[in-house]
Image (tube, rainbow over all chains, first blue to last red; front, side, top):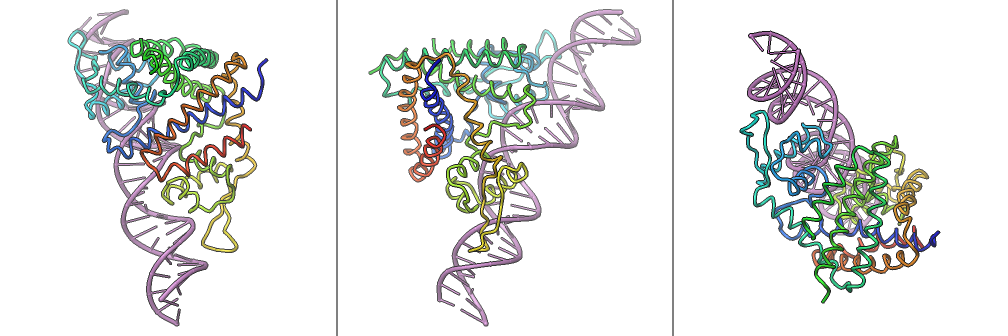
Length: 172
Length: 172
DNA sequence: TTTTTTAATCAGGTCCCCCTGACTAAAATT
DNA sequence: AATTTTAGTCAGGGGGACCTGATTAAAAAA
């Protein structure tokens, strides 16, 4: 078994990263006169955006199912995104009960912009360090997937698929 | 300059970590019948708790100043924490305008419990990997501090001090 | 065709983070 | 003693993540 101290050190750094990262883009958004407010994480409106950037043109129901949200919540988030011009709604022609949600250009940009600016804080790391980090995070993430799976088996597949597929699009 | 691909890989993993981590404890809280709800991050009530665990017995005004919050928001969070028995309020005897906020035992436990369970997902990492991770995250965090500083010079000192001191208490 | 299922919507709610404005009580100044 | 500054409180508001219940319109099944 590994050295407890080393584990704690790493854990501390990870927590610190969490907090500092959060604050960093909070501050960035506040000062930068960026009219757009929030980080758009994997929650609420951000969730929708992420799912759509992986598979565009889903119906609201589809979105709700994939994201484990009630259809009402989904509708709420979608409507908010429509107001911000990030997605569009249109009635399906084949089944007129359905509403198809699509990313607008702005929506696509927004989704990618999120990741485009990430590597900034990775500057200063050597190739070796980047490789190490990637390898380590892969393990950590797998541990987390396992944790999610243990707690909620049904949810994993969908979630993991959405996240991984999306990240693949972005980074590979 | 570093390999762009390596940087992207690492960035992808980091984003993935963010999302998966978030979802992991969301799910954990949902299923585990843990009566306590939220992760208590560096926001709102969590912010207060963190600050207090670094320097207990501050006045509300002090808290507000350190955390860059309005006094009203601070009061709101403090009151919520009081209801949860995590902090206590008492009038200062030397200056009867002031209200001194202190962590209760439960509050202290809660603050530390947060970190106690973190190393879980670090299991499976070797000592070497843990060292590497720590070193790398240190660099990343410093980059982020620099970013915060650039965007909001006034805020940095307070923030960095609170975070680092608190983490030191927890992990060293 | 009538009934049932399905995709959405509206209404209303809970709780969280955070802010401004108005007002009180207690110190510090003048 | 009268005034001003300071620490808090109350009231009210804006936005966000979510949910349940009730209702409508359209498609699928009986």
